[in-house]
Image (cartoon, helix red, strand yellow):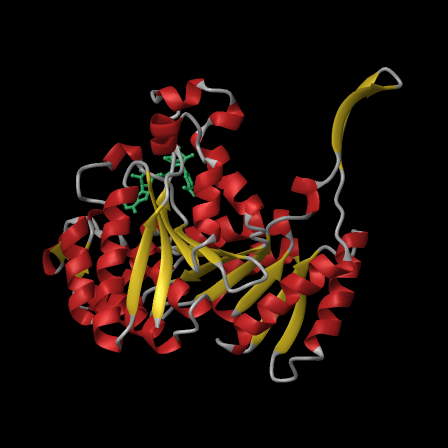
Amino acid sequence: MNMNIGVIRGDGIGPEIVAQAQKVLEKVCAKFGHTISYTDILMGGCSIDACGLPLTDEAIEAARNCDAVLMGSIGGDAATSPWYKLEPSLRPEAGLLKLRKSLGLYANLRPAYLYRELADSCPLAAKDGGRTFDLIIVRELTGGLYFGDRFTKVIDGVETAVDTLKYDENEIRRIAKTAFDIAMKRGKKVCSVDKANVLDTSRLWRKIVAEVAKDYPEVSVSNMYVDNCAMQLVLEPEQFDVIVTENMFGDILSDEASMITGSIGMLSSASLNETSFGLYEPSHGSAPDIAGKNIANPIATILSAAMMLRYTFGLQQEAEAVEEAVKKTIADGYRSVDLMPRGEEAASLIMQKCDELGDRICERV
Ligand code: NAD
């Protein structure tokens, strides 16, 4: 297969971590007999410097012409970077919002996986025998409260702000199908999260999810209120496989889920539209504090590339080869700086620079 991949290196550590993911992809190609054509796409601060805009129409067109886009991260230090003296619509992050919107990326996938060897970085008390979990949050990304009508005005002499929360059945059906399709490729369990005891949108959500579930008899489905889900994620994250939820609940729960792994440099993400196109990027930002030092952890970006192999190209075996190579690298004791424990335990581990860790993973693909 030839894979036509757009590459947004972006700002800060972006170029360093994307280079490692590309190295791993090259190894996958050599091993499984695929080829890749890359198209470089400018977005973020580097695009502002080169073109005066965080994302040009040409860049959107270039992304549209690719099968998928692999991205590093964009943005800089808001306190010192001249990009943040521009009006909000011209700042680096505006480029990403515009790209998501232009490409109709309605489904955001955020896996949270706790490696046994990294269980010590999990802020939750370890269970006997060691804790691990492997869940994915499927968040609706283009509807709900963040996209509803809003206004602030004085009503009866009182300053009042209103945000509206609206979902239609088609928006819910689309994201529910995405979640069930993903569950079929994983543990065949979907937990739909809502607030159906209070909200009409949630009651419609629950009804449509139940309808979609009928087409997936192999998948077990449950419903959970969002407040309970926030609690359960901390109490027993092992119980979850796929969580599907609306935009704002997903925003909050996916950050919670990623932090209970305790290692921001490990967490991948994907944003998908109704075709097989996807934007794949790490969950973390551009880490300007460590940019250019070759010490960033490239694993989140490498695992995002693995998601691309699975979800855009349908290459399950190849995706697993990358994920297994990451697990093996961790199990063999290799760590980037952010994963190094303090104290005696560090003595048995081997600290790696960003590019060295990329090499160790390549060797294990
Ligand atoms: P950040 O995620 O960039 O950094 C937070 C902390 O985590 C920093 O100490 C950083 O050094 C560390 N860190 C992050 N990624 C790491 C990695 N791969 N390896 C090792 N350490 C890592 O968050 P921030 O500092 O709040 O944001 C910096 C910039 O990134 C801002 O401009 C922000 O808007 C942008 N941002 C971009 C995206 C994106 O591109 N999608 C997402 C979040 C933030």
